[in-house]
Amino acid sequence: MPININETEIIEQLNNAPSVRGFFIATVDVFSDSIDALVQRIFRKDNFAVQSVVGPLLQDTGPLGDLSVRLKLLFGLGVLPDEVYHDIEDIIKLKNKLNNDAADYQFTDPNILLPIKELNLVKKMGMVQLEVTEPDDDVNIEFYHLQLQR
Image 1 (cartoon, rainbow, N blue to C red):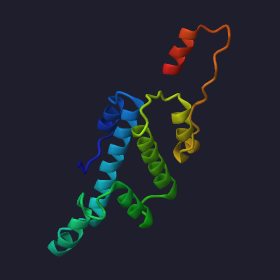
Image 2 (image 1 turned 135 degrees about the horizontal axis):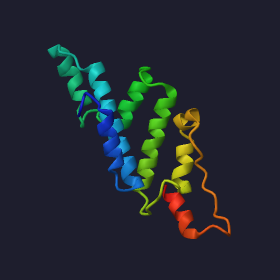
Image 3 (image 1 turned 180 degrees about the horizontal axis):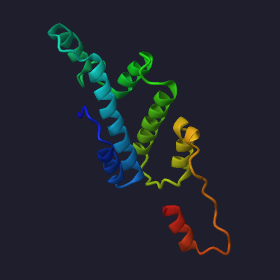
């Protein structure tokens, strides 16, 4: 569980994901590490009395060991803004949905694009066009598939 989060390592981890499912698994792992580091910073103190009380709560088997519970705790304490909290929750839901679905998806599939487009961050950033249009009759189908992969 790294305390210092290196942006380059995160980008490499996400880039090395072999599939869309792998990308979202890696994304949730990054969130988990980041949330864990934040909770550790907030609750871990050097005082032995505080450690003996708070430590067991934060362990994997403790009541705050689950990612969604830690996320809700940080949101409830006002550490995470509303939009960030909901975006992380939506990404976790998408990861769980992909884990329960045997199909392999591309980022351009509507089952992936629609949840991504609903993220607050994507709406705020005004991302480039995420619309998938059907090919015209005069467009080579191989060229169309190449564009989709980009």
